[in-house]
Length: 440
Image 1 (cartoon, rainbow, N blue to C red):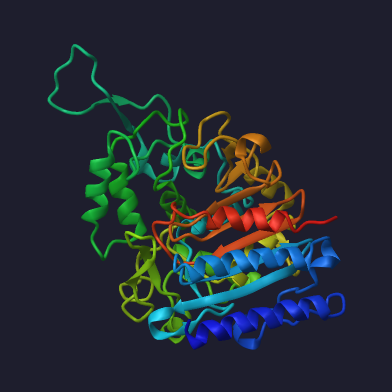
Image 2 (cartoon, helix red, strand yellow):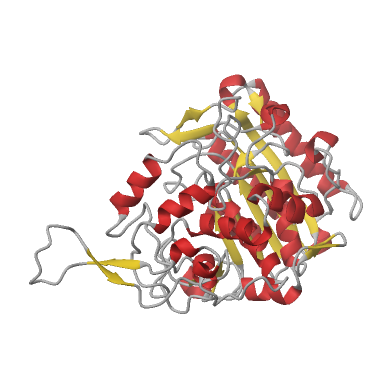
């Protein structure tokens, strides 16, 4: 075990003891480095909000186990209840090859955890009366007019192709792109997987998201809009719609309307060189499940190097646990944080309702529906997880995850960097070990 690993575990122990020993609300605040210029987090003892310090140590131990087995390099975990952060811990290393310790201000590729932020950005324009959810997106992005759908040919048809084209039965609406029901081609499944893969592979490095969206509109749809749920690139279309309606680039809009008001000082599409020394390395599992380096956290990392032109709403951001907590404390608080309102309370309710009926969410399994940017728990038993009905969540391709439970006033966040990660239960363990610590 490296010296830095010992130091990380010692720091975790000191923090845990201080949380137990301090007066109510007097747990040690994050350091200046942890805060990186942002407003201090509202740290409190777990017992002050109905949680157990002793039982939360099970979460600490579980993350340490994944690190000791070399299944992840390090983790940052955060749990908050009733507006108070009761667990905020860094363990392991952000870059083991350089013996760089994980810190609470480490910056992570959050991938698809960008999607809720992009969706909120679009809904701020909804609140200004710029569109309605049932508006066809072709009203604002005319390249999506007169879409066609790929379907399997009839048994008696010989076309020499895997599919034929038929006119879409209905237009793609704003609601469809926010709920993954538009029918876009994707790299997961369907008749158009090869066509979409070709589009992604051949994407010009100089493209903007507008260029990609225009090319996406030239592909047929996998199904008629609204007929099914299919994960794919629709939130890039969300970001492009923000640009079209606001007259700003997507990164400018996010900074002005979300990041600056919420004090999200470490959230970017492309990381400034001055902060590269806080970026986590990226890993993949080897054949035995132990991690192998796939991207160094240096100036050549994808989220640092030029060009800085493609602002992906589907998965382009890097962030910290603290920044991401601020964003979702805003949502849990009804659209405002520290006196800065981003959304109205009723818009938050609309976004976190189930908009997809009984369409199956193959990526989540039974017990879930989908709102405007979030999966939503609809059936506690079928979900096979402890989050309350109405909880909303999503995760990122590099094993980051979060959820918000309005009933329990609870937020949980895990930041780590490994892909693929489906052989691990680390994301599920975060939730299980958080809920078992509730004692009121």
